[in-house]
Length: 632
View 1: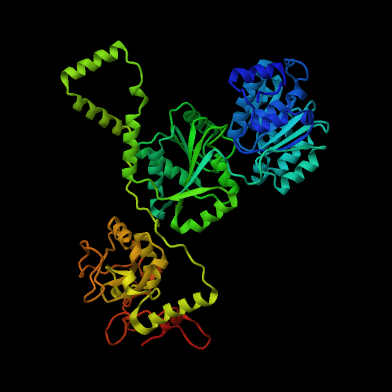
View 2: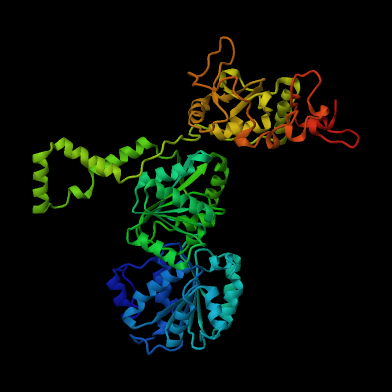
């Protein structure tokens, strides 16, 4: 349906901008029962809330007039949670109220406060700002709220989450009581409703969505990956989709710095946004995305709300969000204003349960798969090259002359090869990735008694002197592997298990028996994961440890061929990554740092370190010392 008539000046601005059909929230605020009333509005992210409250306050600011009077004290105040959102709102209101002669001033942290003070002193009609900077201007007497007619709280739930309640109450208490208060939020939790009851009068409630309803224009995908290959998965996702704009969300500033540097090194045109950057740097980063100079933005959750980038077709969750609301807000940066978008959650197998919980709480439909492989990306590159719009463009005389000159000097195949190489040189190389867990069995919950029996069985195996870990499985379902550490290296199942999981991209439930010998350790991997485990350990760069396939015993061939292993007479290994037995196993005897005290040279029979026999040996009691404290 066409836009309802609001004000002739605003109608012209909408027509010039190409706005023909209103979104549901824009149509709702222009209904007769919402005119000149306080509004409590919840609407889906990316639904055009900025234009909606711009239209809603027009009747109060302009009335029947088409233009504003000379600017003096501000008539409207818009409060936003972040600098980026406030500046974006400022730009939207400038074009919307431009034909009406409005003067819009922004007051945000990180910008020149003296310039803002001069702009307020010169007079304006609308002020847009963040809570902290607006309160500062109020306390210093720079912002006059005596003539304020409308106050808008944009993304009110986010402002309360960020701890701005005190600032908001201070600002609202400083404005006239007869003002209109428009409260816009993606969600309406109890604290927002309580704030509305305190500062609004007979508010008209507008709800254009069902609570926790997912965005209908976003295609959600969850991609399994190994914990140490999440960064490679980001590279392959960016290469597979080749979106004109993409945003990658991380938890911390340090993660943003690291991933941004890694993508730049691989050849991506990337920018970063985090709280440690200046406002100028953050504004330049967003502008680079808008004008196409950058294609990827790596950001913390500071950019999870309100940011509107027209060409943003892809959102990647490098780190899973902490709650489902953050998941929806991050994902809402794409699929805005009727455009389609893709949201990708990178899920290490150690975080799968958390991902499933977030997805259930958000109520979204997600398709699970492995990350795009290098071969799939190359197929996509071939399809994109064949369908490149450059082949459909009309050739000029100059282009035809150059083409004829090339054909005179080179064959058609040579020219085509050059085009392919040139196209490939502009694209970052894809990464080789293992699909972690495509055929993993669903985890079955066991009761407390079963888990207790399994733990006891595992400890009893060790107590029998076999130095085995894990649980019993049929030998037909398991494959044996060999590791180049043993008792001489103080090998112990407690720190061997994490190493096996890390190097082979498996979980504890996929590891069977662990047998520790003098110079080596043998362990079982479930047969369904053995091939991927062998592939993963071959790629490891760990020089201290070598894992290879082993024979299970006479008449039991190994799974495939074993790769070259470490010589059995290699120097003893001191534990993973140089940490040594200090943090991963029992201390060795005869330590030089502690001196060659006779009581510390080991057992008198000279057979080496005492074998580890399970956690119960370390149990303390009032009248009995630990075994390690005994002296020969």
